[in-house]
Every structure is written in structure tokens, then in C-alpha cells.
Length: 460
Image (cartoon, rainbow, N blue to C red; front, side, top):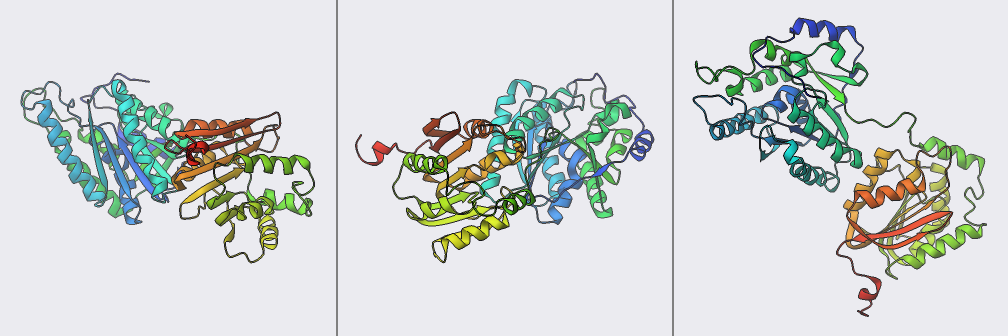
């Protein structure tokens, strides 16, 4: 959506918005994250929309990355005194000063894409954002918040940035919120989807820092000169929308209704009902055969450091340990962890952890990562987070073996095919093995540089 408006218009009065904000029940903004990425279409967007959020993150010790798509050189297209190149240089310096005031340790990245032409350069913007966000799992940032201009803001460049951010965040399960800028100027209460609105209430210090940061964007809050074409862009009425004691954000990505992952309580109840052999691992030929196929697909006899996600009662864990240097096995169910620990005894090479992924993730690098009959218990966003955590923990010579039941189960948020579609779409891996039959699908993935089994054996 694009809206025709002029910055010279008086716009919607702030008293109107204060009343509208007071009439709605607005959820609080959760700013407790491991990494904050603020994306702006133009210099000053980040300050107007998220300066308080950046100050809050900095106060908590959370790393902040600020990405500026353009230099805003088109802010005064008819200026008789400033060329686009001069404006770009000035606006970069203003942004550096403003961001450094609210988030002194922020990593500021200027992409220099053409102002007003972000749609034509969306692929470049996306490539830059992918590079930024894909650093997060490796850095241990499991909960990443990306704040960008709101998709409904009525400005073409803002919409493009929002769409690009959505295309990057959604597959990775990152939290994506939009901050309005221009809707405060041209819009009214009916233009905001209030069910998606959140508010971050600023402290006095945070609000004061934001006001000072806005004032540092001199080319926007003051006239470039008295001449026509050099008028103030952010007049006092416009600035009043950003001098509140709250910042407003809108959820840009949500799980579909009903898409809740299965939690530990579900598994604990399942084990209570099926205490002896809950999955039939020890009695069913189907399970024994599947384990044999899994081991036959692995590219190395020695498995090195192994991470098993969803170890259940430890039957597969015990077999993996026979070929591994060490094994870290994880399960969300306390009963499963207890059974696995009894089965594996005091083997010093094996660690069984009671944890739910992707919220908790073990440190270190692994040569073999096993994702067997686990992925379909997660929501789509949690699965995407998990896939990127796996990719960040896999060694250069390592492999990921994934195996999942293909028949639909009413309680499961996803199907096995959903899981393997995500594995194939999200990460640039090569597929070493694909085994697909009516009941289950098994695939082995490896980095693009990994050798084939014959190459590893020196046969080719």
C-alpha cells in the first residue's frame, strides 16, 4: 500500500493519536532478546521508530545492529543549495551521531542503495540482511528481534524494506516487528490493526535520549536554508508523534492460528501412559529396520562428535555411541531423559540433557547431527530457528541426518514432509542421500564442500 501525502501538510494532530492509543488495550512490547537488528529505509527512520528500543537493549547489554538501506539523498529533491551527494554525506553523519547517542556500541551498516529505488534493489538489500541475521546463531543469539519500517506505513521504500525483512525473518523464525513513521502523519485510528499493536513504555532517560537523538538529524528537523525546496521535513507537529513516552510496534509475522508446538508436558504425559516402551523402539521391526537404514546412509564409519536431538529412551543413542568420540543427546521429556540415562549408564563419552530445542542449545561444534522424529513437534518458526542453529553447529566435514514419519498425526503441528521441505529450502546444503518410502523420509545433508563417500575413500 502506498499513500499520497506531503511532509508539508500539517497532518494528523498528536492529541488525536493520544486519544486513540488510550482507547485500545495494547500489549506490552517484549524487548528481552539476545540481538536487536534495526533496519531503516532512510536515515532517521531508525531514530524516529526505535531509538527507545535501542536504548533499552543497550541498557540490558544486548548487541544492536543498525542497517541503513539508503542514505536518504532524495529527502530534498528540489534543494537549490544541497546536492544529493552532499545530503547523503550529511545524513550518514547525523545517523552515526544519533545512533551512537542511544546505543553507543551499535554496529551501524550503511548499504548506500538508491533512495526511492529500493524496490529495484530489493535483491541486494535481502542479501545484506541475510548476511547480518545469519551471523546471529553462530554468535549465540537464539532470540533475535528485527525492527523495520511497518509494512502499512504508506511509503513505498518502507513497504519494500518490510517485505524484504519478512522474507528473511520468516524462514528463520526471527521476531519481526514494524515501527510506524508516516502513518502518524497521514493516517487515523482505522488505519492501524490494533490487535497487532504493541507498546514499549520508555523511561524518562530513554525518552530524553530519543528526543536528543531526533534533534541530531539536523537536515530533517531544520530548514536547509530559507529558500524554497529547503523546507523542514520533520516539522514540530510531525516530531510530536515521536516525543511520546511510548514507542509503538506492530507484529509483522505470526504463527497461523492453532500452530502451537508440543511442549514438555505433552511428552511427559505420553510417557506416563506408555511407560515400558512408549514408541515401540524395542519390539517393532519397523523401528529396527529404520535404524539400520539410518546407519547405512551415514558417510563415515566414525561419527566424531554427535548431537542427537530428541533421544527418547536412548536406544539410538547407544548405537551412535559405538561409533562416536562423544555424544550429546537431548530430550524435552524428563521421563525419557531418565530412561536414556539408565540405559547408557556411566559412559563418560555420553551426555544426556533435559532441554527443549530450539530455546536451549548446546555449545560446541558437531560432526554428526541427528534429527530423527522430532521436527514435526515444533511450530514452523521454531523449526526454522532449529535448522539455522543446526547449520551453525555443523563442522565442515559433518553431516545432518534427518528422518521423519510421513503420515499425518492430528496433534503434531507439522508433517514429516513439512520438516524436510524446510530443511531443503532454508540452508544451502548438498543432499548426500534421499530415502523416501510410504511411511518415512530420511535424508542426509552436508556442507557444499563435503566429499562424497567414494571421494572420502579415495576411489575417485
